[in-house]
Image 1: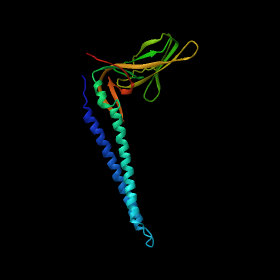
Image 2: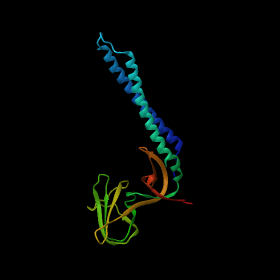
Image 3: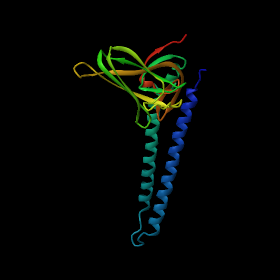
Image 4: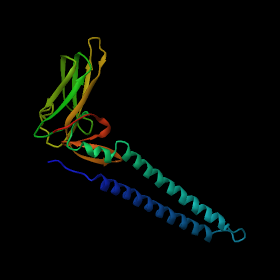
Length: 224
């Protein structure tokens, strides 16, 4: 089932969160500053009192800094939204896309990757790594031709353990030529986009269980 996202609502919620966070920081900073100022007034030298104009200038300066930080955050957010962001990327929902990614998710006890080998290789080593950076499975092949290939994995580790569905794993490919030179291998994934969202300021598309940055999408096709 294809999911839909309202880009206007999502963007509004994100902007509102930014504003609320900035207002909270501003209020906390003002309270801290006023507390320090009150302490300073209580302990000032009566023969050399502090100039009230200096107090006002300090408050204005502090407020200006906080407002500038808020403005910078909002500008960064708006740039991300307008440059290949949520509003434009929502058009990818329902489209078949290809994206560069070295990740795959185990589903129904298996995972698969597609990759492009720049040219013929005398040896190719595959390593599947978990989220902690530990290699759970590996294999070496000899004399692999250049072009498109796929790697199917049954989700079983080298030690014989069947890993559960839902885990995200990374494929590392090391390919070398007959002279020991490194050959480029580029993993990628293909599928229909089912959703678009912004995570930590980055717009990502959902392809199955994977969430892939829009910037990694290399091809789009209509599914009709």
